[in-house]
Amino acid sequence: MTFQSVVRRLLAGMLALLAQGASAQIFDDGLPASWQCLGHCGVATADGDVSLAPNGGTHYGWISTDGGADGVLLPGVNGPEDSGGGSLLHSHLFTAAAGQALTFQFNYVTTDAGDFSDYAWVRLMNADHTQAALLVTARSSSGGGAVPGFGMPPPAAMLTPPFVNLTGVPPAWRPLGADSGTCYVEPCGMTDWVGAAYTIAAGGSYYLEFGVMNWFDTAADTGLAFDAIALDGAALPPVPEPAGWAQLAAGCCILALLRRRLR
Image 1 (tube, helix red, strand yellow):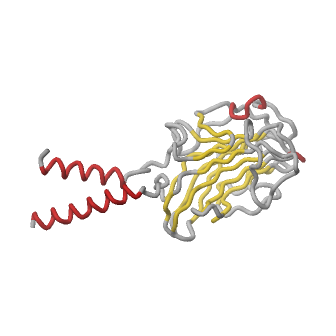
Image 2 (cartoon, one colour; image 1 turned 45 degrees about the vertical axis):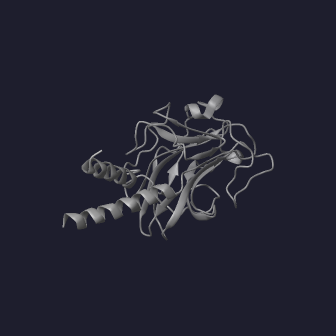
Image 3 (cartoon, one colour; image 1 turned 120 degrees about the vertical axis):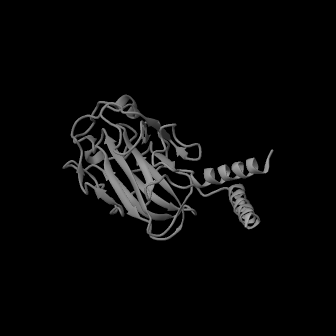
């Protein structure tokens, strides 16, 4: 192998490390292997009443109470003792600097309302699993409003539009399972896609948490779709593994030596 080919391979490896997450869309090939799901999570293309997200890809991510797990809830909201069937999805750990803009799209879809109002949320979590910010809440009210969530803590993200009602039409969407196309208590439906934007307050390592919870019972399911997640317009940059940092540092040293040699 020639000296020039070694340099080319080294540069290619460094560029690959620096270019990880160059696109905001991350679900066209399924949920990333580094993301962790409790309950029922997946990806879908345009399905039933849920279209593709603005600025997203050919698929979006989703979580659903259908096939969910017990014990899923948002701290501070909780629920009756017989609530159950929720789902949680955690992104990979990523790095962010203070002042960076975190943006994404979401769509709340529910067959429940009234006294059985399921709910969903998106949180920014610190690396130690404590909450950094409650970004989004969704939960229907008797009047049909669903975002921000009725009776839930105020969200920290700026929403576009800032207030959203449910469509009032039984939602057809396969992640709802057998409840797709039904409405247990009106008003049900979906919010359609809502934009969320949040300015990172302090630099550090974070992950996103997407959650949905079945309130009062395990019937009449609810889900949350999401897509186009970006940090300053690019996909969430993963925290490099130690080997990645070593490769990048070694590459920088070799390039510095090459520069001196050429001089």
